[in-house]
Length: 448
Image 1 (cartoon, rainbow, N blue to C red):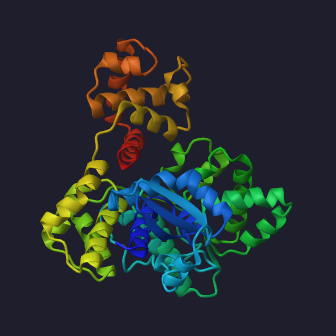
Image 2 (image 1 turned 120 degrees about the vertical axis):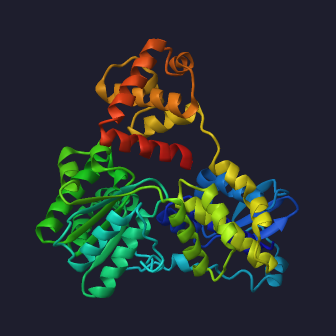
Image 3 (image 1 turned 90 degrees about the vertical axis):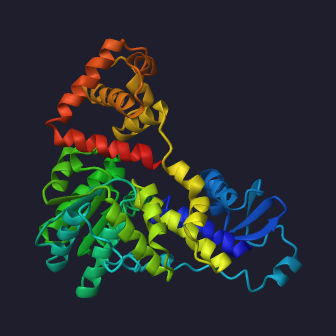
């Protein structure tokens, strides 16, 4: 595998593990410029990107590269042509051109990615309500289902649905000003507006929007100033019958540290969920993705992948991308035997059993708590309930003994654990909201 092919394969994996905004920000303009013995040199466009990749993504990049080429033991980041002999660049003049990815051609006005359409969006029982609501919004933006709030676990297609909706509105109503913004970027704009004393410019820019799409609004939790600005913006757009579309990894009721006035706004329109796709839908998704890449695999290969990856559409795409890389390098479509070899490590990673620490940390994060909070003796309701859920999951997912669970959670008495597990089990029989929360937590635990 040469430098270009290796980096394309690495980027294909990275794109499935981080947000589109982060992928575009930190990986555009990067490439592998040399493989020297056990070392890979990666070129970055500037010092800022170099330092960020070293601090935040080095481990992930190395893990993916070593998966393709186990002999690689070290990766280094350089700025442009730094530390390279002129002859190296002369020999590879054609290879040094910027890598262009179809998925990066984001519209500068709308921030929408044109590759997200309804043509390549698979509808099934797991997302049909959210899909139907989006179609209603497209027909009458700002009139029906405003706001439209879509929620679901990681990697289930929320962003695809949001951007496809935005792209369809742009196509049908070319005069409408549509803006797609990941919540992290929105927060950053508020901070920069305050810092540079340009918050009024920020407000004016967003008040001109006809359709505002905010992805991952759970990241607004705890950001008081951002929530305040968004609340006023929300009201301004809503009063003018401008369409607002939101997504989150959970329903509004269980977004922690969200002001009650924003929560009520989010719940004032249509709420649609996206759950886990069934086997038939997973097969359909694989076939659509393969068709996009002009590759066709056998039915048994599609079935094998669909049976192996059940909790995350991104995992399905990641597995498929590995097969596509093999096909491009060998000009041979992998059969079932080769597929099993290529995906062996990935399947083990995707389906690995969880650990007590993983469950505890995931529950704490979901409820915006620290692990220290869960392990404490506090009897506050906002801590007691998550602690009981952690106990319940340790029992049901790992079959841990009551005594070991008690020890894991700060030395509680085992009778406390028994009570907690029985209480949660009984509540689940009649409390759909709690059932939903626990399912979202489990998705996080097993999706990595």
